Length: 208
Image 1 (tube, rainbow, N blue to C red):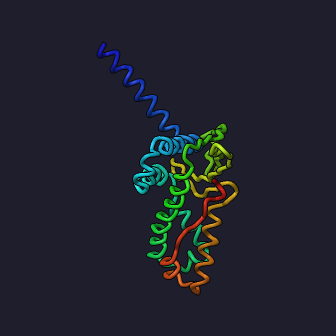
Image 2 (image 1 turned 90 degrees about the vertical axis):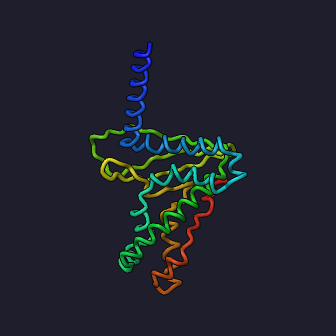
């Protein structure tokens, strides 16, 4: 009996590892599995949302942060002109500043979706084609409305990372880049002052 249980456990473990490995290389599964984790946080922590908002949002960040290519996105947000003007230290600083602001923006928005559901449009994916860029689409159902979400992904080595998000037609990468450029212009292209005054704001992307 013990031997049989061990065999069942090994089978379960191998299937779990296989599923997880597939999610790492399949961009559609990568987005879908992590999205459902976030939905689970939303549905199972309503009391925590009321009692400890920061702890609630940190649960979302723990899932979302490893999915993002912050180095690539932050460079895109700065734009070629300001990226070339920035020192190595300023580029590094902005990665950290932008990471915090993006995670806060996303988690605060997601936290207000409550009992929403998210469905991923999963298409056929052939790993042998060695595709480096792909778009994964979802539908967010808030109960009263449905909104499209689009993730732009890029493959780094064997892992997929998010490099942009479009929510209900609002391109977050473009929105943040416009904000950075406007802020830089208002500070006479002073990168240090721009970083010190950076506050990302994509609103609620029209999702309510």
